[in-house]
Image 1 (tube, one colour):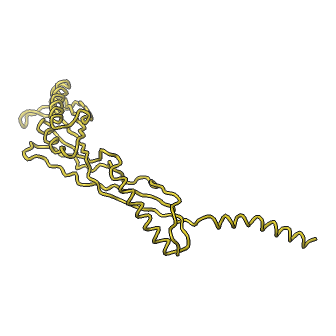
Image 2 (image 1 turned 45 degrees about the horizontal axis):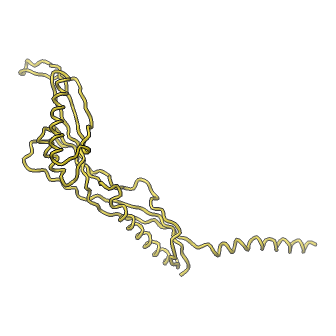
Image 3 (image 1 turned 30 degrees about the horizontal axis):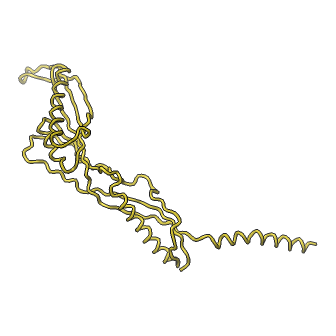
Length: 240
């Protein structure tokens, strides 16, 4: 009786293990690879900030003077080719302060009001130099920018992704060959496995510049910006 029980238990175990072994035989081996790709793209959008500062003995007079100068700047950049949608009020500030006036040794403090206004201007890289010149001629006290970006948020992304996929396949082929395998197919693809990857639209500003009367036309060089892509591909592999 004891031998019979052992034989029955062994038979039951073989029935349990057989389907598992069959599943392992039909499940393909896989290889997970991360690919990197990048392309250089020329920006086509430029943005800048034009600022005006005026002072007067009353807040109303200071703000009115700033408003007149800002209106002149808006008219000038519109004439240079910037649409109304590309001009936005960035800030308006009026504050009170004191300054010293009079000859040396006899100066006295006078209350003054200072008005500051700034405009955000968005245009194309093709005319941004002319826009800067127009703003300066119209009386802008300072220019901040330009910053460069893309009118198409996906600019360069497709090309960078294709480069990343090609990189992943090349790495997979090399790794599989080193292991005595060959790549037989693709099981899954993740086109955005990481966050924080540089994307188009990242700005590259030149900083703030206090402007002087323009004699020579301003030339702006947008250069290129790098667009990166990362992919994660799981390949199926088989013995070579």
